[in-house]
Length: 436
Ligand code: TRP
View 1 (cartoon, rainbow, N blue to C red):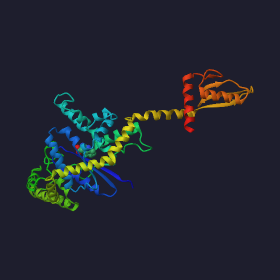
View 2 (cartoon, rainbow, N blue to C red):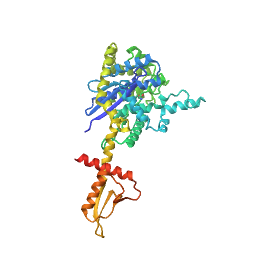
View 3 (cartoon, protein in one colour):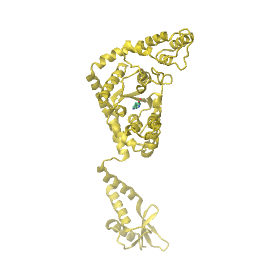
View 4 (cartoon, rainbow, N blue to C red):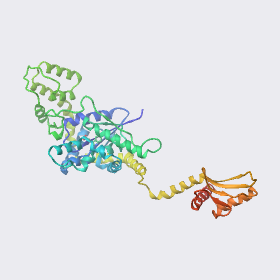
């Protein structure tokens, strides 16, 4: 079975939260341990600039996210772990893809459309406050994915459209430029959404997201974790009243951390009227059991940022050498960003191909005379007059080959000019010289 390439990125725009953990980090690390996979995990810091223009925050977030992945068990000796901006081939590929991506495709991106809708609601110009970076977000992401020919991209449901766009853009490129040999340049990626817990609800019940300010930091100290869990929205049912699991953020978060029997027990507790306080206590215990050992590793990692820096650079250096740099060479070649020194070579190749087509033919007509003609496929370039012997005709052919066509003993074919004959003769001479 072919090795499956799994790739995912996390935007370095915030502090890792439980939603990132459940939706991306945990499934990605689990997938990286599966046999037959080659994994690529990276810090999407170019993406972060679209949303965050506070340099200290970009840096801080990059450190926290790198430490989080390492703390959660990512092994940089087994998977490719790098920072997007350490792989400049990403931005170069972004441009190549920009030139094949349909603008209409990008107009339909959810994030961009949402920004336009907000502007319309407030009576602003459609594109007010929208940067070209936001608009181009899907192309940059396509470059991340296509650069390493990923097969599977573990993402949250909200990112599925971006993977589809990456497929679309990759397909257009393949269609336009083909590929080396019979294989297209780009593998078309598929999104891998963990069906169970693709998106985790946050404190207010909406999707846990920094933009809703409803997150629970993954490595909050235990006391803070507890406090935040206690602030998850619930309805006003009293202890003893049966509770509904449908639509309960608390239940959903519990499900993301608990085993099947634990979930069944919680479902039963809801039905038999567990109090919200007790349910929250159980949820805290469950999450902390999983997170506490990771938190400890995280704290020791983040105390040595220079070591993390070194690991990231090393990862980028290796992944560029093995994949990104040679692939970009191939892609530059594909689109015509080529070494001009090779133009002359390919021109003479073209000529000898033509020389194989143009050739002299000798034959005898009903009038008993010996004729010759210079033909290129079906086209007659020169028509020779009749000679009394084949030797005379052959001598004339040799003279034309050697000295060029001078109008004697032959006429140009219909629609043929002298320059075309001269070029054909040049090509024949070159081909004969090459053979000798
Ligand atoms: N856009 C992704 C997110 O916000 C992060 C990301 C950037 C990404 N590039 C990627 C994810 C490539 C998967 C593959 O979650």
